[in-house]
Length: 193
Image (cartoon, rainbow, N blue to C red; front, side, top):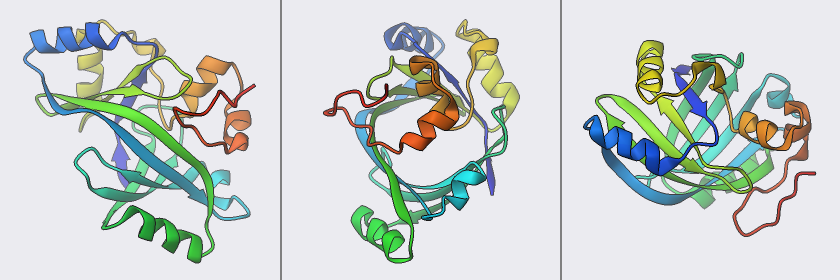
């Protein structure tokens, strides 16, 4: 599996960071777009027991990606992924259900991507939580250096899945959030209590 080297910074003023990035020569590579994803696991939740899941997601470039994700630790570089590009979202979803997987959650977010050299900065908006960013690069040093250049506190970085974002906002445990298995969509009221 491939190592994902990415850090999240929560409750970020997107326009402020975009202005800073523009001053550094960064450019928007994908304008803000709605993304949808569906996460899957087996009925006995064997993937979840290993902090893993299957994700089907529409990408910003129009591709559809099926991915096995696994978080080994809540640290930089400890999330692993194995992607596969598929042709059709609904066909892939139907296939996963046909082989015995179950839907854990259907989710929406909005994302805009900027590039600074080889580093990606994702401006994310998810339902019910303040905006945040993700910085992803090929090396840990590149992620840390850009975070520092943007004035972000490394001690406040979060790693892994979307779970830490909701845990921080709703003051619940990761286990409580993941057990909810609720749809997370912009047109739905908050379903975390």
